[in-house]
Length: 138
Image (tube, rainbow, N blue to C red; front, side, top):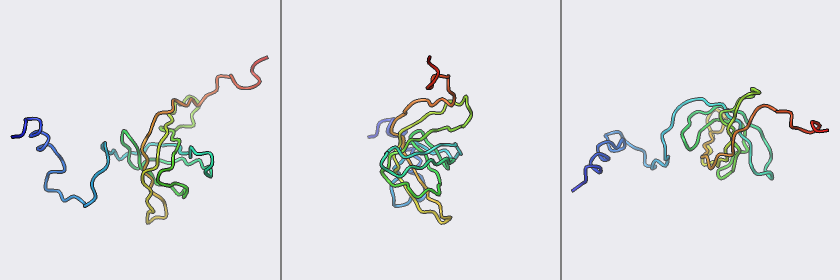
């Protein structure tokens, strides 16, 4: 006999309805939200060819995002520095993350669909300089 919690889980499970599912199992750990969030993407490996890609997301979740890019240098397993949300404003407080590419699709429009999962937060990247650079000390 199922416990009340198990009965609730079965009745509220969205995959148990009459909607047909594809043969591939859902691997996402959190729900997706279709929204555009501007981000800056760079490879974290210094031995890879460098690029600086500024793109909007197609969908985001708590643990990752999916976007389209014309940059062909993305590969599954590649580590990235992601600044999100990204703004060039001098007072912007951009957050930077270390992420890993988990999906790369060749799209019919000639672009690549790239999905990444966030591995860890690197910190806040300030867009301003408080005058602490070289030449400020005497």
